[in-house]
Image (cartoon, rainbow, N blue to C red; front, side, top):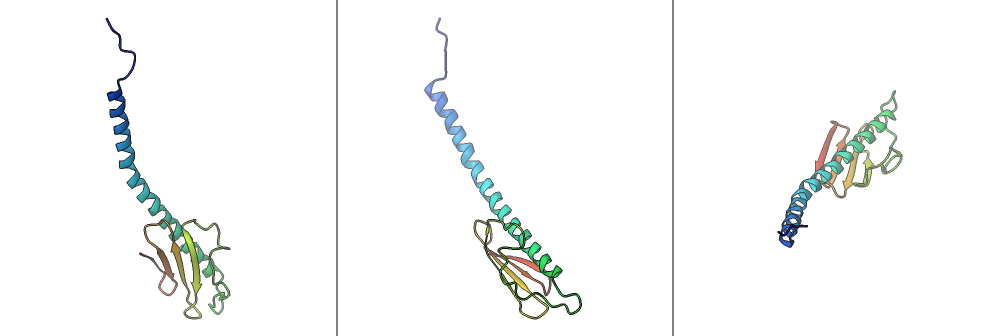
Length: 122
């Protein structure tokens, strides 16, 4: 009587093929979730910058601190997906924040203070 002491080569190959298939099928949802997370982090950062600018608005005149044109530093920890972030002032009472993204589903996030909209653009 012969007792089997291990797995055959065919059994090992089948298990390795199934594991490889599982890894391939789970990669794409994980990559998409990571890109969505980068986008949400960037949107949150832009909202925080907008709140900080609103907090610095002059209470009597409503004027904004127009010396701030770069929002890459000074507004908390910047997500690594945000590569550039600029603040422009189309009027004395309004501002626009534009953030360019890398590694996210969309490439740009724009906040307009005139109507309070946050838009993600491809």
